[in-house]
Image (cartoon, rainbow, N blue to C red; front, side, top):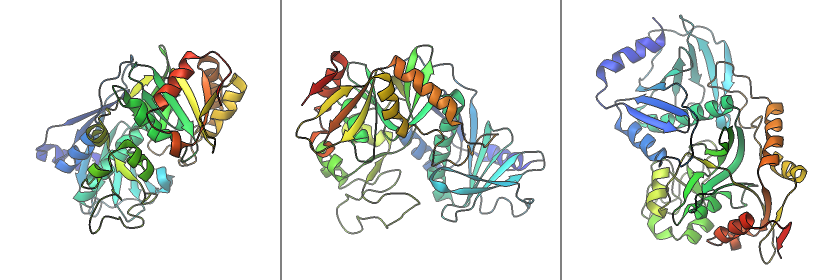
Length: 390
């Protein structure tokens, strides 16, 4: 009997919590766990309202068992490693092959010791050494399975954000770090809209046209955004379910310099549920990508935008297209771990810019990223001229 069956069999008999169903675009998961913290993390991180768009048929449902075991392999020794896989944020996993052909990925990082076991890359067991790590690791695993589904779908992944405006029109935004992507998505979702993605976002070609699909990650807001959005007072007493809050008042407010790899200390990380509660902005997994915006930071007095022709649009979007994704050295939760190829993504980008309007918005995000972004995007939608603004 393989490790997967040996671990999940007893867990199935002992699980006392109801199975939690997590849905994100085409991905559906049945999460089995007896740890309330797992349910709390997943429910908060994946809190959404149903998309207004017609989503393609769902993929086959994935089973994810989330288990705690001090050392799941102490009595069932793993054989020699068969390889290594590198996950997002640079974490490495040693790959082993189980007796019945299953794949066992053992984390090499000692911060959160755990392993992932799958007999078929559709059913998974996540086993952590410590119960307190389960919620965090479960949300990471769901994110990675959503990402794998998007890559398999042929969707284009960008370092970008997306929102559905109150009038139902979808906006997709890319730009360099600090250009206002996350804050713009939140502002566009306020007042009756929805946030779709705040850091990494897919553009998926569907029968109904291009759709923006968010990757389920925490929303990260810095001090300027927190102040502009008017939530500083609320954050001073708030402990996020996902990570840290550097704006908390009182002793011990500031986190350790590196509470986990790659985690910035100057931003609060908020789950979907927390963004909804603190800002009144719900998340949805997908929306139509009506308007594409490339954000460019300047010191100009007033924001201005230009509609780009197809060649300039492709050149402006290409640096933000993550194919192959520099943070993923392998498709580490796929049967074939080879990174996605860049050529199909570039061909998809060429089709995208022929079918969707792309604008370059030059602005000072510290001065201009506020409720005015609604008017800027509305002007983009309404204008047919080449240059508007100062």
